[in-house]
Image (cartoon, rainbow, N blue to C red; front, top):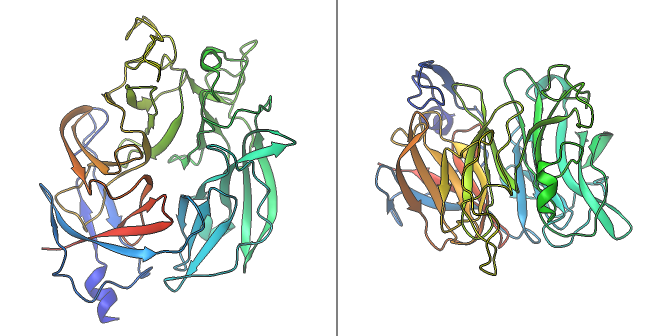
Length: 393
């Protein structure tokens, strides 16, 4: 109990970053009572002195098979980790269990496809629902699907398919996909253009969009394209290339996302109902072979990103830092970089970027960044590790 009392405390803090300048809300934040992993015995060796926050890096999970893609922290201290190859793993009492979770659906484990994101229902304590996105195969074809299920011991039960995308395709890239709930309990998820750029602009095609549904798969009546002929009613935004970061802003409640550009032009966007984010009609990037995709970076009726990266960092995973563990990072956005192998820290004044810092350069391809209920920042690298940042004085 002494360790818990030392590690976890509650506080009320005013969150200094807002997506709308008029929002000056405060947020009550408290850390979980659960210790997912014990702290290292030595908190003085290997200290990294970043610009605003000192920390050490602690490996907490090793030996994963392949790419760890999604992480979910259960309130009983268990951690669930998706491996892109198709396995769901459990960490119990800080130890990775050798057995794979049973009844996980088969996946199209090819290219960027596989077992992807995982998230808990906001009322998980009451209903036990776990949400998983994956590339669902049919023969040699696949597309992104969403299920929800419950965990009973080491097996998924009560599995329900709540969203499937058509048509299936043999392409092995741009599946998306992140899952996030908003403050009203709506489920948002992202799906890439599946390598067919023009599909992102077509409202009768699922690819290249963000979606908003009820937690059981029903379509909200106030979705922006409900009742519009030739439009998929689940669509919330369109013109998105391949979004692999999605997070709810802790003050405004709006959804923020980042998406991969081509060669240059990775974007951060605030997702708002019915907006067109322009891909591939506008872009700050070019084709990988150097050819021009579009001459335009802006057009009427198409949203500008609030920030973009050129050259591309290949972003994956993102969180806003909250709570009392990292007082000098509160409100900062952390993003994993696949291509440059670091964590990007982005500081905002409203929606304007005022500072950026590269953390842990050459740490490995960072596939995901999450903040656990214990307040600590965890990140997954494609060499099969989960690590966390432990703040120090």
